[in-house]
Image 1 (tube, rainbow, N blue to C red):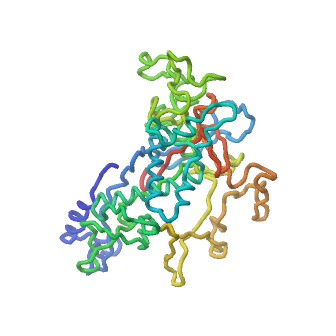
Image 2: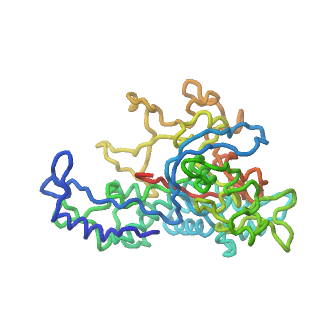
Image 3: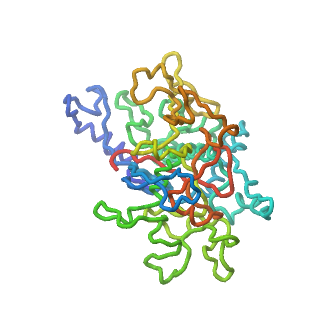
Length: 473
């Protein structure tokens, strides 16, 4: 993690020195950061730091949709101009090593709830094929160190989403440890573990506070926890939206000048072929740019010169990164995104930050209107918003907006299709993007889209995380 500004420096230089020179409100003239003037705090914000493994992807407009022929005749990825906000994207796919770290933490902290660890296990049997011998991958791929830097597979959409939530808490806990507000605590167990949301609303109290807690200017000699207003903790890690993933993959930033995209890309690299054509093309003449299946029976090329250096998956840092600095955005493994699949999504969704899958919730409150509910794993309990509380709203009424304005799925507010009976597409069908080691070149194009039920997993689908960029782009 980049250490841009230490909280210790903030507390010493800003919090204490502000006592000598108090900033005043531009609209009231009242002093900030002064208990005698009400104690409203307004400290200097240095900007969002870049979390581990993340790359900043500068937002902008692009043409979303397929750059290839619609060979499947599904008409579900028509071209449409949209704008995506600036965000962060993982430089690499999540590897087996990363996921094993997650499993180790779950097994250690939730020792009294072994089902949590069991539910997070990848489906290693997804490697099996009835007419192929893949048993070594079933046994070794996840845990053997030879594959530790290879992308984790056999992870369904729900597991990938849970990993991202866990990662948010570990990164924010590490920030507080780094800044001396907390100390590492290996004895956290069950519901007594650091969860960002629970910490921010006062539902987590560490048994090992650090030596540099923030002084509470309103209570003499007291300290306080970090608040959202301090800007120290990072936003949530999450899966990228389909639009974000596609925008990051196509990486037009490398082929644009003076607000003009000079060349429409087919893949995540420049050029019209799958072979390398960069500045070092003489050195790597003829090399394949990504890990994919070149043709029937050809997953690697001949032994003397493997065309892509891999038969199944390969390491998460391999080949050449695209113009955003992201690796394997077209091949190696396909990747889960947040969106629920609809064939008509590109017709319906907003043209700024398009996304289908919103389900609005709120923290569960006690009888006094306070956030006071945690589950057995230490997480804040959220409940759906109700139409009754949103009667005066114009932008939404109900919690579930997954099938909004989809006439095939909603009639008078009720879902009509039953999964597996009348359609394979419903609110559990999630989009995945990009080609895998077992796909042909057609799926290397970032605009192609496929879907799978969120509880299912395959040996060809992995994932990477994204994060919102707060403030200016």
